[in-house]
Every structure is written in structure tokens, then in C-alpha cells.
Length: 185
Image 1 (spheres, rainbow, N blue to C red):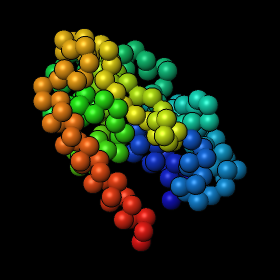
Image 2: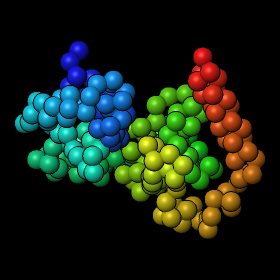
Image 3: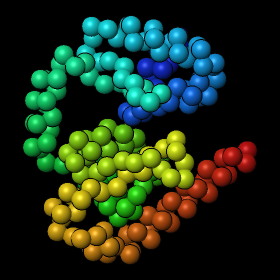
Image 4: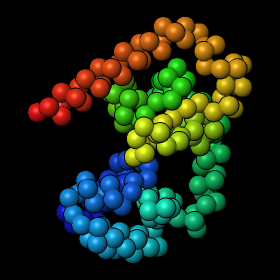
């Protein structure tokens, strides 16, 4: 596997942007090699349905601007469909935690939630912001539009809010313990 293939695989798997610095650290190669490989990847994706997008030293995979009509049509169709079980599970975690990292969502659900979070974001149901405690990750929260649609002024008005939130917090503590134990090895 060459470096461009590794970068492409990481971007596809993550389903969200990643910094050049983080790629360099993760792949254990220098910044110059990362930059060269990103340029090669951009070139290899030319005239394809997928492009490499950049913003403020972060990169991600996106769809080619030439295909925006098709993507817009798919997006409209997607927005009119009912939410899947995966979307409802993820949305429930985001609602009851009211600020949750993707890693905790993945831990609770037992699967990667990148595409589900992206779909919920496209629908305007969740929004992401940079974590104030760790600027390398995002925190997902319900949008005002979602709260309005559900007829609540705040997440605390959700049914059994305290009980569900405590359960999620307990799970979060388990995850932190597991991560800390992994670091000790």
C-alpha cells in the first residue's frame, strides 16, 4: 500500500475531515511526505466522482462539484425518507447526552456512526462543533430545529431524561476506564 491509498482509506473510513498533522502522526511519516501524497491523491481523483476537499489545513473526501445535480436529487430523496433504526439510535444518544463525541456514540452502538451522523447533520437534526476540551474531535448536539420539531424547549424535557442521561454517563465512564487501561499497557 502506498501512502496515498492509506490516506484515502482513512478519509473514507472516518467520514469527516482530518488535519494533515494528525495524518502525519498517525501514519508516522513526515509532513512533507503527507503533503506530497495528498497532492498525488488529488491528482488521482481528478475526473472522478470523488474529490479531495481542503479547509484550514483539514482534508476530507467530498463529491465532485460537477455532480451536484445528482447529489442534490439524492439528498432530497434522502430527506424525505423515514429515519433508519441506526439514525434513531444515534439521534437518541445525541439528544439525551446533549453534547457527545462520535467515539462515545460508536462505543454505545458498537458500530461506526460516521455516515449516520452525516445523514442526521444533512437533515438538520444534529450539529457538530469542535470539542472545547480536545480540539482534535467534534461534539454532536441536537439542533434547535430538532428540539422545535419535538416540541421541547430543552433536552431536559425529554421523557425519562435523568434516567437515560445517567445511563449514558455510566457508559461514558466505562469507556474512559477502558481507554485508561489500554494506555497503561
